[in-house]
Length: 163
Image (cartoon, rainbow, N blue to C red; front, side):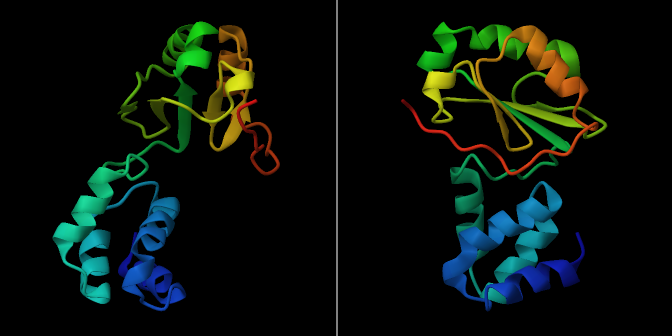
């Protein structure tokens, strides 16, 4: 990520320190992670101590200080999903991608995470791939979704809430 792009994101938020979290989100969305150079530039431009930025980026799990894969896979392992077979979905993701939860493959194709709840308890087990929700997924369907990633563009991510 170049400095000009970072400056553009900061300028979009009028260089306001109060927009720090949103700026971090925008930088990460653009780059798939938060490089040290971007954080340094952000600290300089917003006149926010680097220690505050580091505190925020390490406190919130959403932020990543290491490169993420082009495709992000999140599998819910909360209670509702767990009892409906979430571990089998996690195993299927590993078999299909070679990536275990908390890891990214060396080619930066896939990052896999488990989460405690995605807010779609009635659809468990739930997997979110690149922002698209897949509910009631079976291991075979999990593999199919991951293999078809590049074939079709999807509409906006679906929204759901616990029932």
